Amino acid sequence: MNITSTSNIARWIRRESSHIFHELNPALRRKTAQWESTNGVNFLQQIGVKKSDIVIDFGCGPGNFCIPAARLVGANGRVYAVDNNPRILKKARRKADALGLRNLRTACNLSILMPLPDGRNCDVALLYDMLHFLSVSERKDLYATLHEVLAENGLLSVYPKHVQDDDPRRNFMAMTTKDVAREIEASGYRLSRRLPIRVWHARDIVDGIVLNFVKRGRIPSIQRG
Image (cartoon, rainbow, N blue to C red; front, side, top):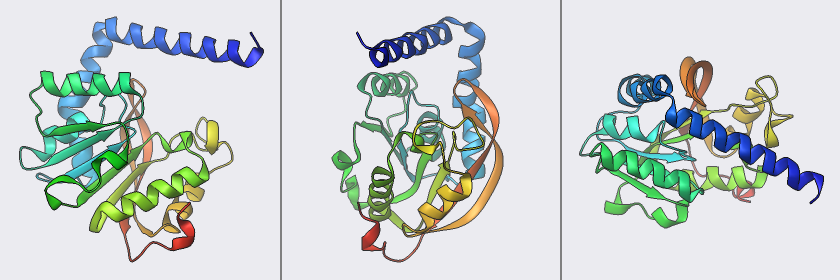
């Protein structure tokens, strides 16, 4: 077994141990439940999500944003939770089912959702703490796909965690928040708000910056791919 494989196994063990600790720790479970039932709903209202909206939560993880979003948009809204990890996606699905949130749908990729059911466009797309996992070309393809499904003046809300000055990781090691904003604006969006706000990260509420963009015009073809 080479060093890279050993390192990957060690990271997996640490991650899974952390998940198990979180699941068994009553205080952490209460904190998560409070976020998903109340604090997260208030957060999304501040971001701009409204009752009856259609929301896409891309890279939804275990449901820290799609669950409060489903509570907020209500029976006339829809939330589409997308994640390429089947195990985590099932966890989000189980949470929604246990809470009776029938307005939440799950998918392992965006293409399964296209076009969105009922002929409705997306009002809000959330890209929270996940862009650092994607390469430049993957990010541009994602921006382009969301541009196609967002309603006119639709909201693209981004939490660019793990940038250069904020625990840098993976594909954001050399990226600043301004770099991320410029990249998104070059893909057919306009930065409308920069919100210093308390936001959920990992297993707690932290200080963060959320960038809100609005869709504009046609996406330049050079940005596709």
